[in-house]
Length: 299
Image (cartoon, rainbow, N blue to C red; front, side, top):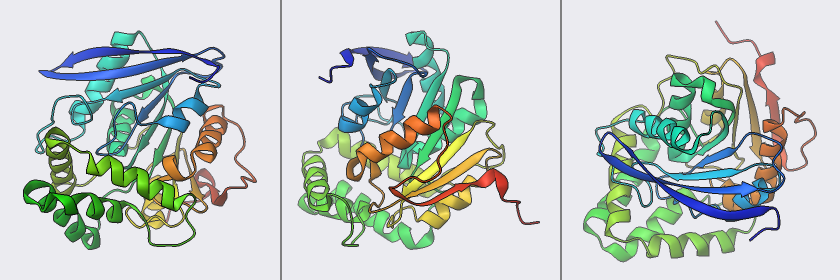
């Protein structure tokens, strides 16, 4: 346990018939609002590792298993991000937390975006990682193939297919071999409940636009991804950033979609700066840093 953390507590929550969970670790030296971490489709509340540990230097950290994630109940694929977003509000109410800094990545970014649309008063500042507005046609066959392997096998091919979908083949990825091994172990250990949630969550992504941009969220938001991200390409992440009136875009060097595993220290530093409203100029680990508030939209 890091020296600036108090032992984590786990709480059970209920909303609309769904059971879900939170893991809260308190910092001994908090100076910012608590940080909530919402991850990708197979992410669990215990999976944040070095990112959680780094954040505890300046804030309490809340890691949820919302409906459709981890230990929580399965969320049917015909439901969008509203139930998880409402569940996050219920979770914060249960914990007595009024306002948070929010990080949401990959599949979870649609929940963060929706929460910022419906309850902006609950979010101080938000970081969305590895996100885009809609799944490109080129990515859909790969996603459907992974679902088919999860549903009917051969099961031993599911893990490698899922890892290949998430990771870029580019050789210049930080800790690439280690990250590949960690992911392979995680997907290889997936049980029937994990796979059912993966299937439901992927069908949800394929059935609708990932994010509804019709209501711009009035929350300061930083969009980020790795320079080599092939699952949610940087250009699409940056394009989505223009849907927010107060937005920034940062592209991380030597990373792809899995920035929380490949560059955890740099991601913590980026969040610490942004959540504290500090300048983002001159980041040594970024290939692109843009304050999009200064760029006029095309008409």
